[in-house]
Image (cartoon, rainbow over all chains, first blue to last red; front, side, top):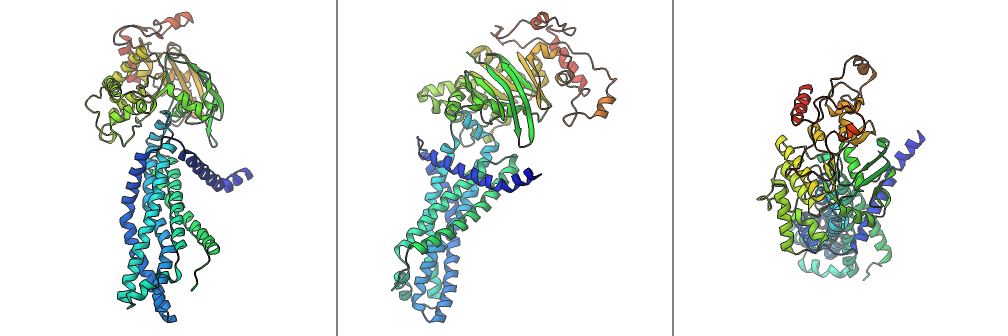
Length: 261
Length: 323
């Protein structure tokens, strides 16, 4: 009885360990030749094609909401001229990586999990191993790298579209002046903000692709198993990404001093 | 050509569920072995253990001196080059057309030129009757065609061991007969060791040299075809003759009441043992033994009417009648 309880209680640790071991396998596969260049570009193109439009559509209201909230708040303090600065800070530091993570996990990750899951239940992965090909090196590594690359670009896209959306709302709806919005850009924001946004996106892409690949490759029990794998992969990725986002933000604030004056 | 597979004390369980316990057998080099068993007795699991896709809890699988169950990943990938495997649904790569699928092992493991590859691929596709479908995607063809394409892919590297998972599922009786004939001819031609997992009693009676039966979490019997076909062991007898009377029930095993009710029922007489399937050119296979040899050597009287040219039909009719 105690053994059963203990094994139940420890099961999540076992899953986390297996996921980590899988990540190490992927890291090892990264250095094995020949690198699958074609698969990498195909996957990058595929992930980009399923994420670009939704990302842009998410980024516009995201930037607008921040402009509305921050703009209203800042007007009460009488510091309207800093609206642009606050908006840039919020979009580049947080909204960019968060929107990226949502789309990478929701659109890119679920597509990866579904694809690998379908291959798993059709025994394609087994056949590959029997033919002497390691599916991690052949299929997972290119997907992880493609996901990271696309995540970085998506982050840039969200930043640009979000800031532009904020500009439109601030200038047209809140009657801010274009000059004040643009000139205050660099008042609080600084270059490291951009770097940390990109690093976050890179890490989010990595986590999303690894979790999705792991869940897909371990799908079982027919078509329902694939559905479950996709579902679990999206949920787990969301949770992981939000935690990692928090940790990275906290670290960043500790490590990089805020800009003054 | 062909290598033998030695399985010793193999045990496998998933969590608490034991699949099979202490399986020990040797598949002789170059012979056709068939593994039988009621649904869910872990025949496919055994097949996957043989190629190292699943690790057994205990025991060893020895092929050319390498223990597949306990060797390093590098050795495993090396030993796997001896294998050709046909999975249940063919396991074709969905993103490639049939030609690329069949050419895949050649492109990965050999340095052959594209024209040589084309020659070999077309030859294997001709062998399984898929000429004309080379540029179709696996999603566009029927299950039986996928299976035949999978067989072509398993054959391109001239394997020493061919593992085949349920070749007859999803095939019509005519195609099943053709594929059985193909196995026999292939065995004569490449002399590889064949291991076929199947349910199809008719194929089992005529194709293999050796038969194994997995039942109730263990290997009930493994040996020459004539030994199992003339066996009085209730499980073997029931399964090989597709009868309802016997220890196997709808759900794995029958309970005591059912067995007691059947106690007085006589088992129907054993049907005659049919002749083994010949190669299509009539030249006997290396591993083929003369009909009735095992029975003679071991002093077993085969059921009346055995080893006659018309006994295939007789066996067919009797098994149909009893189902």
